[in-house]
Image (cartoon, rainbow over all chains, first blue to last red; front, side, top):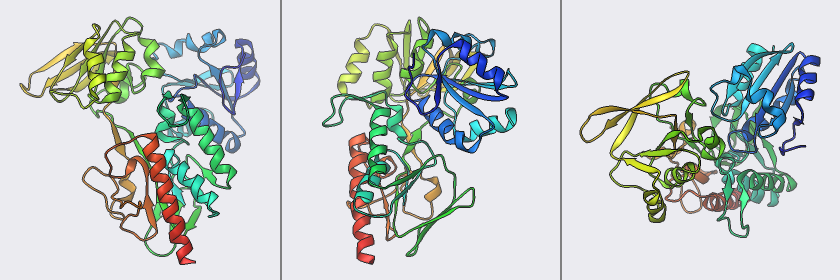
Length: 115
Length: 301
């Protein structure tokens, strides 16, 4: 079931998320809601999708039971701001962020962790 | 050329492109500006209630449907606003030229700029109650500010938090009387007046804050699980200083036709000197600026 209205592909199940990070070297997943802190991150990801074909960009609904795998990830312990954004490199969590991020912060993380 | 893609910039884009001007919107942020930060808009005439991002989406589609080009998340490194041809250069080297420019850069939420801020953003410090309130179920919270947003959001946060302390620098609130009254009536809200936060403290997550009483200068600590900051917005006008006339509050000075002191350069929205900052006033400013710019360009032709 889809919860988000964005132009990036929404992952609907934990199984699908696992398959994506297993099959792709560089994956960025923004786990959030249709809220003011999350929408800017989705829009930046939409723009980066064209510029960075080496990275796969996805969203996941924070309120879906299936996103527990992100909500409860040890790397996200202590996070109290949406969205939770995950950067996966070769199937492993390379970087996580909490709350809104701007273009510069996101591209810096992509350059540093998913290059 | 319109610099900014909030309510003012998008409205200007709709009017200028519908007026058959070749129109480009460049924005250093995302489309929608502060509208995106608004969960629900209930006082936009003609629309009963609408999510902020939904109104943005409609405005963006309207502008595009009239032929307006929108480029967001760009970094502008050079502005040339004087002269017949206005010019901006992007970080990637692209240069855009126009006969007229509308400045609509909007504003950004003010932060307190005190120790611990960067460390605890998203780990106890928040600027959006709608987004993050449910992380603070049965927790103690502090709300900083004394305007409508602070008072209204403090009341909203009591639906989640066990207690909310409002910390405000003055001995009175700037919010509308009904918002103040509602907060005062709420048994979960207490007030610390004439005080300011001096530091955020914790270990991994926020645990307490340091508060200074501005009257007595006494500094105390208050344990808390979260701080929500609502202390207004700062105009994004630093890039235009020395070019257009800006007042002591960093707002662009315009006349009733939204003209700045530079011929062919107009300004609109939250970045201009004015009393009320609403989506409706930004839409109005953007409309006037676009019509004035159209008149300016046509006169030059």
